[in-house]
Length: 37
Image (cartoon, rainbow, N blue to C red; front, side, top):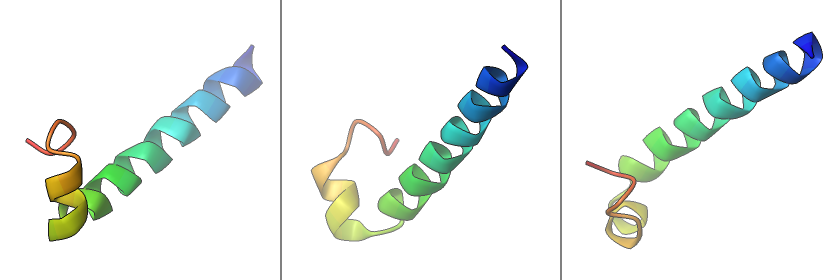
């Protein structure tokens, strides 16, 4: 279960990075307004 926790933390970290890079891109931000507040 520890391995699963680490994998989940890594995934959420990668998702957060992807969302940040998306929200700093005007086209991606416009396509995903629900992710970018």
